[in-house]
Image (cartoon, rainbow, N blue to C red; front, side, top):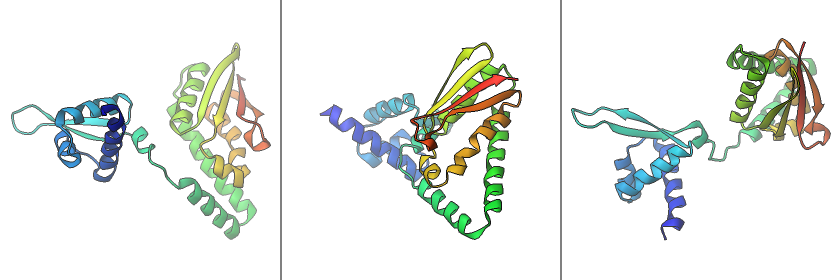
Length: 210
């Protein structure tokens, strides 16, 4: 019985934190009508899974209390309609501005993203920066990996595109990825080897030092 109830209770906790922002274990227990001991077990599991975070608050002279909230990963468990909104927004832009203006808008967006990547991946070796770039892409919803193929040469592969729905309607959005990676890794040459827009099952890039 416990096994079948546990996932439901965990989902209830996540939903409550989504609505309330943050909550204590005692508040969750009272709200969900579950014992404090069981709630704490669920909270420990959810924190181990990276779905929630906690912070200590001191009340009086006693032991600190803990407030729980959703992590970024926890929020990603809930479905959203961002892709549909983005496709609709780009469609409106395409109908409103010229092709050159549309191209300029998309280019500025990717350039801004590229500069953000370049700042966040640090100044280590090429392999360290490629590894950090892949971590950033994974955190954004891409199923990405990398591997060295020769000294100072690496392959970056993405099997799942976080903006696939957008790319289907506006392939030019993905067209700037090559430029974006080149800006993020200014001391490297970046070549596209595979592209999902062309019907392949993955996107691939060959990165090598200049």
